Amino acid sequence: MTNSIQLATWKRIAIRSVFGGLTFAVTLVIIGGLGIWYSRREKPQQPWNSNALKATFDTMEFTLGSSKDPNSYPVYFYYNVQNNTNKNYDFNPATFTLMAVLTDGNVLSKDFGHYQSGAPVLDGPAFIPPGGTARIDLKVSYFYPDEFTQADKSDAKQIIPHLGRRVKELNGFVAFDNQNHYRIDLSKGWKDSDFEGKETKPTSQTSGH
Image 1: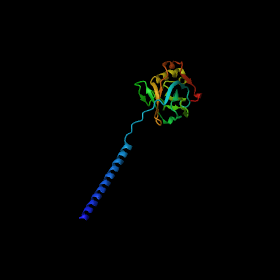
Image 2: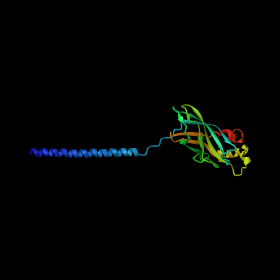
Image 3: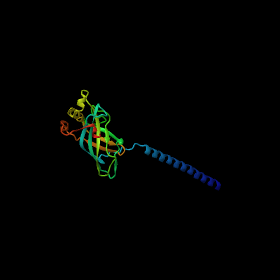
Image 4: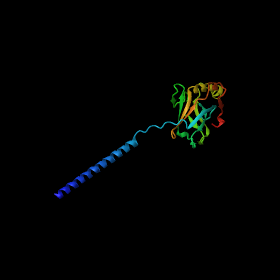
């Protein structure tokens, strides 16, 4: 009788051990599954930081008689950018996505208006120190009108009205730094009077641009 009781007790212990092991195993599977789900779940998008770098419009220029591309003229939009962070900002144009803000609808666009020739180019210093301000420039090239003669292409009075029509399509630009998730708003700073020959600066191909 005693042996029967002892055997029954060991059976209960064994059954409890089996179920305890199964429960532990199932718990591990659930925890592991939750870990995989958590690591693969869609993470919320980090908002673009539009305060780290602040830009103000300075001036604009266009180049006459470019020997690099006789069919278009480059326009340079100059901005002063302040680094509001507490560390050096490495200025790497390769990390930026550039977009224009179109006047029509105030929407973002990869196209910078009619007659655009080639992709826009952003340039600046190697870095901007914390609290410092640096000059950057955005170059956008535009094709000459088909009816322009060679003399017209070297005449600022002929180009300025054409350029005025191009920039009226623009309400500024936006530079997205994909690496740091910074957004730099390059607002419109030019005026209609700039294209009456008063302020817009034509430069020669020897200006270094």
